[in-house]
Length: 333
Image (cartoon, rainbow, N blue to C red; front, side, top):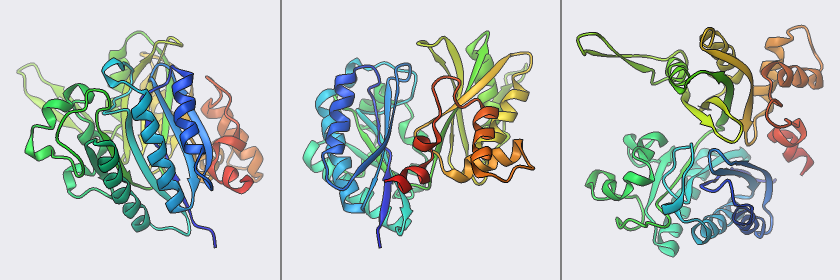
């Protein structure tokens, strides 16, 4: 009976192919691990690597990738659109086949200890591996980003779960955790200003947005969707804006619902022209979109095609279901 865990480390490098290849090479060098996807963004200056394997092999590969990242990435020179805390910004484990969340929590704990010991870096645990409620949410740990990390480490409330409280100017810190499948989903807009995109992002994310009245009173409004994080970004390399989202539970809020809401909210503010999925996506999320747009269709292949067409998933680069849907990748492997 095979046991499969997925790991999706996010590295703060999306422009230097040599550095990216070095990091991915370290991961691929671990026997028994299969790299399923490498998603690189120059604007975000970030690479998202997706790989699977047996639990111990995946942990070894994650350590190899983080070690390479620490060797080749200098965070003091890093600039990009995506929030980040270190050379390896975040490294989550996800249970896939014959594994449980408790297995992934154990992997996060073990990897965190090894990263701290071998690389002398501060390590925070998040998600299901978090040791306190305030560290469950990745965005809270990442608040202030790399530029605010040195000050953050001086606060006893933000003592790392593993490793030193000394700031590493070159490598920053690493956030390691365990979670369910997350879909990194970005919606493309042609808009006049980032302010409009920020407004749309606030209206859809679970945490909502703050309204300031004429007398200066601040009122917090909830967003339209649960299990959604969102922010507005500008992609300089292609000259467009994106509502960049993380769908932390696609069964609660699937991609097509977010896409349709952004289309509605963007009227008069900009034009939606497709979307993209960073990394891999579960088959059911794509089929749900296909059934939404083509309710009478029964064929799986045509449902997948309907989802791709209606969500505009190939608007920036081709969405090939054979290499983007995780079940298809694992079956082929």
